[in-house]
Image (cartoon, rainbow, N blue to C red; front, side, top):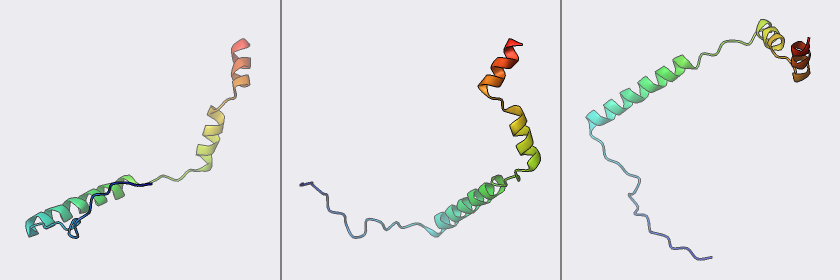
Length: 69
């Protein structure tokens, strides 16, 4: 199988940034990471949560019996 491939220059991945831009970009990244760390606080799943989930869920046959009575 033949394919036409465009040659990639050696310095294709190199990007030049000024010092001001580098510091601004680093600050933005730090802010984003800090915000994500604050929002990822997960609460623990307790036995009470499991009991409530089980209590609230009903099967289709239970719902039919409930509606017919």
